[in-house]
Length: 375
Image (cartoon, rainbow, N blue to C red; front, side):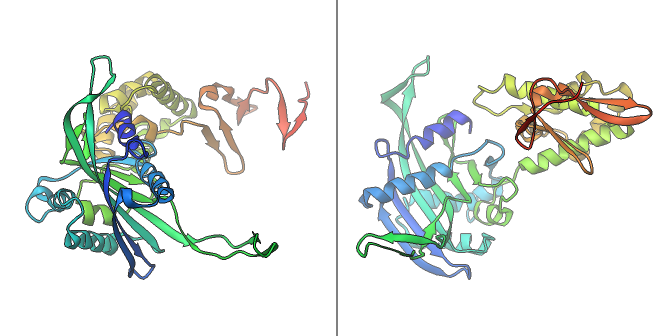
């Protein structure tokens, strides 16, 4: 799914557009015991509650594509009788009216979700009447060819509110605040089927992880059974390994800086694209060559790529670099600079000793205090 498709589904989680037919929930404690279950017609909930649920559902479809939101494909075996995709399809088609199916879904999540605290499983069913689009991109609300029927699962931590003092208006006093259990924003979840090319795609699922480093692979394997793509962290590590193995002893600061500058320029050029920028092996090879990697080093590029990335796998540009800063770390000093001003940091050899030199143009502050630099 691309940015526009994700946004289109997110927009359905409002009172005006709401197409949610049913909501089911299961509160699970840290010992994996079900403490509470609920099932309701969504629109029968109090208005105050629906707004809070909308926030949860929107959060489950938030973050960066390829980092927090990952498009996953089901292996063919999982689409056969008894497979995970086939089970999710039955669950969706039941419109969450089959209690046994819902109960089995809870059990699969509880058995595989490696969350050590209390949490709340939220599962909804919705039917979105997809409006047609004119050739210039305008929605035609009265022209629909398909209804997108989907389920969305959100896994939300439940924790005690912070201790503190509060004002009791009845007693007109300040007193110890009653602590209660609060449902937080989701740490994981998924949308099934995926909404690709503004249409239903039962062969894919969109998975959400609040933290790119915590994707809960056991949950994905047991509940979705989908192929896990390279995570953002794995892609970044693979890219660093690729640079190191390609450059070898020639892994110099100027070359690495130039590679990252090339990445930032490419990301900036494609900032308005709906799809995240993918870099093929050929794209990265050209980037290395343009950054000054020698022909001798490039001879080892292909073998290194096939080993650390895989031959036909592309990488997402935003996963390979920090778009907010460039960081140069020494044992006792860390230099941080905006990516577009990496030119401010240079290397010099003075009296046989290596230095990083930073241009001191403009104002200079030390711990927030304006200072002058001696001429």
